[in-house]
Length: 95
Image (cartoon, one colour):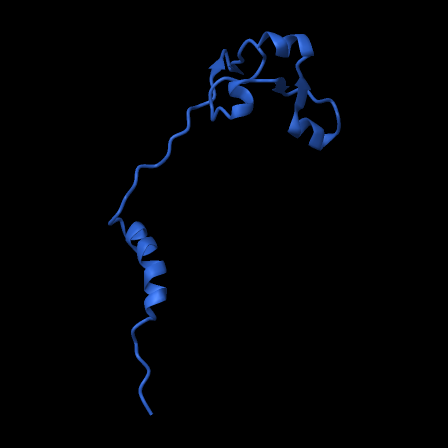
């Protein structure tokens, strides 16, 4: 009977080695930095369409087709999710 090898299987080392190098500090990468939300007098600053300025600007806000904001008067979860009001056809045509 042959003794068991103490070496890990080659497939196991090929998948864990990159993570080990990263966690040990051998391959440090700069942390991603997102732009901060813009505030004016303690209130979130908004663009001409009423959408918040700053933060991660998703495509929905880069070329907005609706107003997204706070002010939903429904129950608890409704106030957490806010409102989404699509622009009128005339406004969309003007974009």
